[in-house]
Length: 72
Image 1 (cartoon, helix red, strand yellow):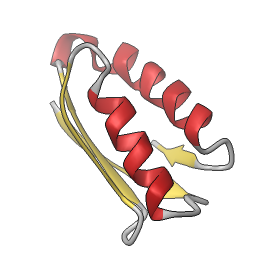
Image 2: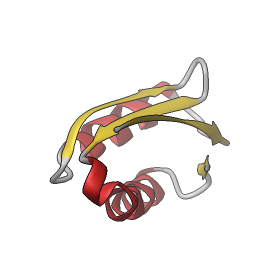
Image 3: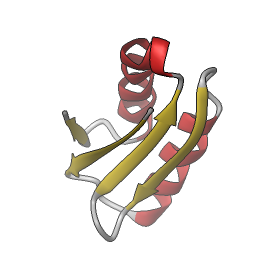
């Protein structure tokens, strides 16, 4: 399942790259893209575990950029 999310308060391109790299390491994620310019994130992950994976994505993103919020 591939879903797009709007990001709020993502401060820099470096943070976006770190978030993308960390998301791709989560088990069940086949691809991810975090764009600082558009303030959007795309996550492609296993359908059956998508909600569980998104909880991990939120946690990982909070470690990299505590101010950033993922609007679902």
